[in-house]
Image (cartoon, rainbow, N blue to C red; front, side):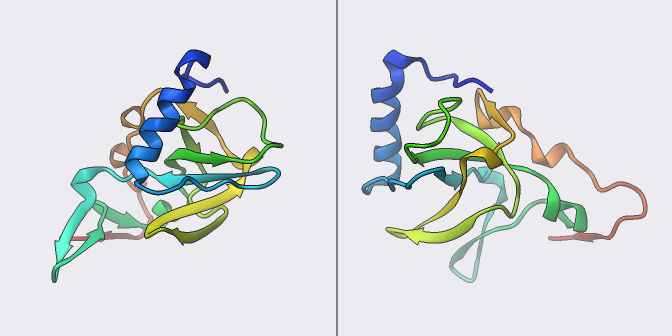
Length: 140
């Protein structure tokens, strides 16, 4: 696992993430990282005036699939495999979610990550289809 953000690009990455969030970035302690989940724009639907995240299909298998996320904070004991601004793959329900200045942020242990992505588009959740025999509910 290696960061795609080069050492001379790290300050620019921090500025871009701070601009994206529009608030101070979290500063996790120890072996914890803070991430913001990546959601494909096509999965955001407006229902009754509220934005909801609705994937094209929902299945029991969806609950265990990994998810791409943007690193927005990192504790001082976390390995240097990835840096602030990297997109990583994390377990779907690992860590604790909380609201950080109105943004949903997940805090999890730094060693609970799977991989570093060059961009979140290379990780296509929509390409996974439930296998035969699994529960499948279509959302329209």
